Amino acid sequence: MKEMKMNRINSSSLFHFTNGIEALRGILKKGFRYSYCYEEYNNAIVFNNEHKEHASFFIGSNGTKRGVAIPMICFCDIPLLRVQEHAECYGEYIIGIDKNYAEALYQNLNPVLYLFSNRMSLALCDISVSKDNFKCEHTHDYSQSVNHLIAYSKRYSGFDLYRNKETCFYDEREWRTVIPDGKDKVGKPSWIWNIEFKSKDEYKKYIAPYNEKLQSSEAGYLKFIEFQEDDDENHFCNFITHIIVSKEKEIPDLIEYILNTENILFGYKNISKKARMILVSKITSFERIGKDF
Image (cartoon, rainbow, N blue to C red; front, side, top):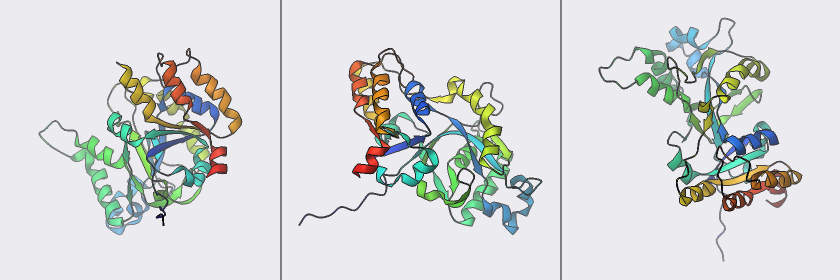
């Protein structure tokens, strides 16, 4: 008797979700785009009696909890059969990338460290509030190292500004690539610390000018390797595993866009016809996935 395999809880691909066909076309044209994502500080940090001296750092004057906006690109490590809830929040337009190639191309792409224990959260708090006081004779910037740890950490669960409800963030199995804090560095994007919001719409209005500035700069996009030989282009084709639109009827226009050799793809002009055909073979629809799986 053939042994039945259990459904996998993760995928060989990482999936980036976006809202709308135009946003997907933007990725196909210029590549993955960084945007400022808001991360609220941890509840355990705010209300722990041993750390009341830090309360003003984590709570605003009107009692609203504070957070930080960090420029990042997010992916999830969830099989397509289980992405329905994720798509309801982030959109039914998806680009999939192969984990193996991602590891080789993007050294700063990493899974998120989820914090459930108060002790872990408070340890991060202690490091965070004292990071600017680190003294060392060496040239290593410990402040940036601490920022890196903050950027790749997330609460196990809590209130989600985007969903407007309590959420188990751990279910998202998130991966990120983050632009380091460019504070005091000319032309580098800076993180926006100690901001507070009551709603998604309020945050979107506030952050829009920062995203526009980021996206109009070269730093706002994740670049692939420069193609030096045919093998580089083959790696590029293998790197993209899925191109998913919401509806079947949207596929023909997307095929036409990709096959048009005058169109830039992922920031590059000279993508061969063969490579374009391979990319077209990766296209499917969220509608089709729902019917077939």
